[in-house]
Image (cartoon, rainbow, N blue to C red; front, side, top):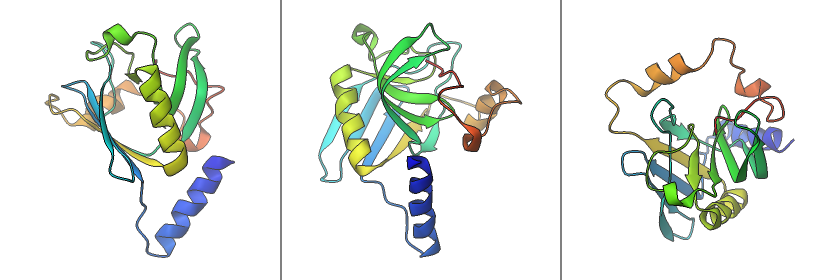
Length: 171
């Protein structure tokens, strides 16, 4: 229901000629394994993250969150806990991790991992203010969509049909 409401609000802004505005900007830099967050008030934070390890992909691009869950369990990875999950693309999420020793280097199956306290703070800001998530990967030589499209099965559901209850998350 919240997604439908958000879509209606966003669509009405487009019809009225207004630009969509996000109060929180989240920039993830894959080569440095850092996330920079800026709030509506201009406060900024820079946190270490873990993105996809070798053999997996964190999809570069710009996204807006489509689901927030205080606690999610990954069906794809033995019900691994994903606290403070901010889902942004086809099951990929920014979420807290207990593996804080691995932050600052690639370690995930594709999600973006944060220290739990940072994930809780980010979750609260995104819930209150909305967000634009931009993931940068300057180290990639090929077009970002080429490898991403190759990694998504032909029968992958569209976001319109997405259900977190039936689809595994990548991390």
